[in-house]
Length: 174
Image (tube, rainbow, N blue to C red; front, side):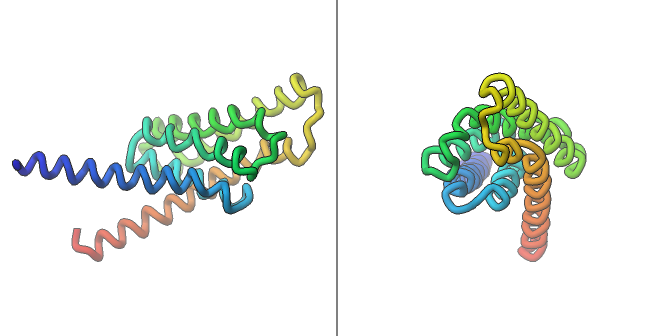
């Protein structure tokens, strides 16, 4: 086997391991906690997925957590209509973070804000014009400013993980 083939297999294996780790992390995380805990961790997984895997894989990782959270009972059924907004917000986060990747923090802030806007505006329209205001106020709040905060915190967690990975690479002599 040639060196090029060996390197390709190693890179592919590493990419698959990273994808599966982030995917299962985002997939199972909603089972164990509340929005203030799971939101930042899932957003961190999305930021890291963009960095290590690229947009396509990060989008896949961003689609499933809300669906799983609904089906395992983490999210009440009243949240079911909001799942498409959350998924869309995750996709916007991934795409905009990738677009503004020239500066980590600029990308985190802009993509967090855009995610917040998508979820908050969509939810506002749904709550006020489709559901006729018949959605509990705590649900309305959950779909507003906490989305921005949890995305920013997720960026901070991703940044800390990147620092730890960089230090471990430096200590390993890479």
